[in-house]
Amino acid sequence: MEGERRRWRFPGAGWLSAKLSRKMIFALLALAVLGWALTFSWFLRYLRDYVGDTYDAAMGTAQEQARQVASFLEGSRGDCSGLEEFLSQRGVGCSVQDSQGTVLAQVFPPDWTGAQLTMSGTATAQVDSETELQVLVWSRTLSRQDLIEAVGHRAFWGLALFNLIILVVAGVMLYLLLVSPIMGLRRIIREYWEQGSLPPRSPRQDEVGKLQNTFADLTEALQAKERSERRLIASISHDIKTPLTSVLGYSERLLNASLTPEKRERYLHGIHDKGVAIQSIVDEFDTYLDAGLRDKATMEVVTAQQLCDNLREEYQEELGDAGVSLEVECRCPKARLICNAPHMRRYFGNLISNSIQHSGAKELRLLVVCRQEGADLVLEFGDNGQGVPPEQLRQIFEPLYTSDRGRKVSGLGLSICRSIIRAHGGTITAYNRPQGGLVVKAVLPCAGG
Image (cartoon, rainbow, N blue to C red):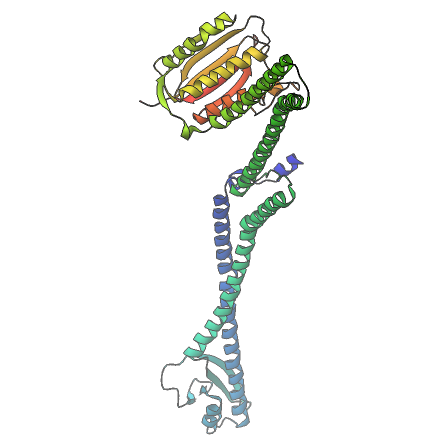
């Protein structure tokens, strides 16, 4: 079906469908062409036909009056004495000549004192078998004012019809180009609002189509956010319910049972440990919420060398004692970055903790590479673990996403990393290394100057 639709598209259809402004230009040109076509093919012909019909009618009237004068002369046997009265009743002028061209009579109405717009008609009066008279009649046509009013009246109705056609065509084009698509988009938005129906994506390439597709993207983002919030609620319930149940159990036993001092102390320690676990979960949620608030964070300018040195100083010795190798390569020591130092420490700390917990490597080796690409600073953090299944790479940064259904942590570490990088105006992605292991790549804008 798609191939058939493309087969019917005329050349330039891609240019026309790309932008609404182009469609409007095309519509205006089409209206202009239609206006010119109607003007030259219909309206002018309409006026020409009216003027031609008026001329033919005037000529026919003059010819008929010439025949009437000829009949009068034939009836009077060529006597022109009563011709003036006959002509004055009809308001026409007349000239009578014999066969030699001699003017026998010439009569004009008395009110013909100035120039007149007249039509002429000729006829032959057969007085007897030997006498034949030539009759030339002048019939006055419409007056100047009558002609102006007649043509103006015709032009008014012609222009009214002309404008009505243009208005109808413009209205249809405006409806098809703007009103109908906007009404359709409004219906889609209302169905989403009232019924929760997901908006379809539009094949249109103009602004209306892009607006509908942007709305579709927005609804997808809202759905993803809703799913994330549901996972957040589920995670809070899951992670807090277990220690809270223990706290309630221990406290109930302390209140309702006679316990030895050893058990009482053990229950109190248990309540304290579960309280600490709940506090750590709440602290992690606070960190997650705070990580994206750049306007409340203190920003400072640091060089790439300082960032790498701080990373080595803070983690290299500690990780070495735990049997974890950390190597930091700084390939652009003079590159500068505007950042919040505590947040960046939390960023690397979360990545290190994630690799230790989930890499699956027996001898864990971590590699941090700092390099510059154009106006960006690239931070690559990789390990030599088992990596992440390809289908999960785009989900590991989502809040509370985990493939471990029996997890005991809230699953916010990588999501906090994404929030920190986004708060610094950067982007973060992840990919598996061919030789094994996961690489998390952050791209941050360098500081100018």
